[in-house]
Length: 361
Image 1 (cartoon, rainbow, N blue to C red):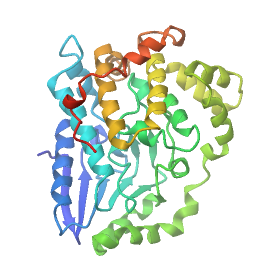
Image 2: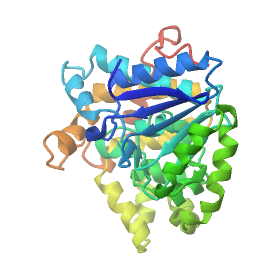
Image 3: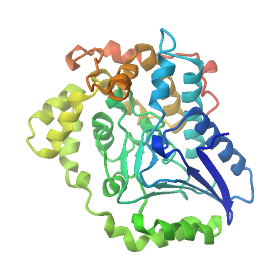
Image 4: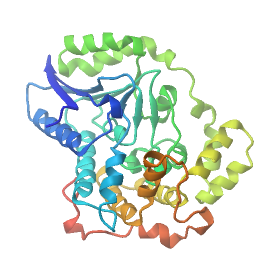
């Protein structure tokens, strides 16, 4: 289906290798379809007892969705939509749901960049799944930086992070490393990059059903090498600042904290889409009370509203297409964002019986 998704079975483990290195494995619609077809086939195959997903490059597992495609497809019509764009988000979110509830161990090697859509194919899975990080891991949900919001199930996994860490990650879009990922609960074990060859040999020599326990034992000696978590050290202050009653209140609180950590967070937020920060905060508040399927259905509606509004098209234009790094956000400032503007993103796009993800459970 695509040259960018390589698959094979070794010792009852299905191995998926993403191989689009020049684009840091950014997901195209064809890649989403190839991943879905593979996982559906292996789900029913008794000869496959576990799944491992990794990359052909140490630079990235997956840097997200193909945002150039988003821009081009979104510009194709006056309302910011196209059939291919609709298909992409529907099928990507259905893939995220498939992974989250996969009935066999699903093991993600999160080496290098893991952002946005990359998180969607790495998070979730059954209790017997594993998320592996290395010293090269650079993890983020940076969507507010391009005028989008933390999707691919982000409304679920960020809203269930401890304290206000989900709001911190979602509103700033800042990147974290292995130690922070482990602390937040977005990773399970640490393996040094130099040991990934040994991990590959372990996968090849261990029967699929025994793989999670074998990997945990393999990783155990390296646990302390992940280092100290900066988020853990800053946890009390993060909870205090990001627990404020609104995005404006969060930024006001941060402005009174002169620590370099909090000033970095404030600087990041000043560059983000004011509207989408407010939408993100509301999204995470709602997501905390929803199951995975409900979160993905909500995100599917919000992403349609976003392309109708055009915020992500402007963000991608400024950061990726023209590279002027000067997005003209609409509205331009936080004090111009009204509750009605935010509420519009959560109004139903389809009747429940016609929602493209109505079959998720």
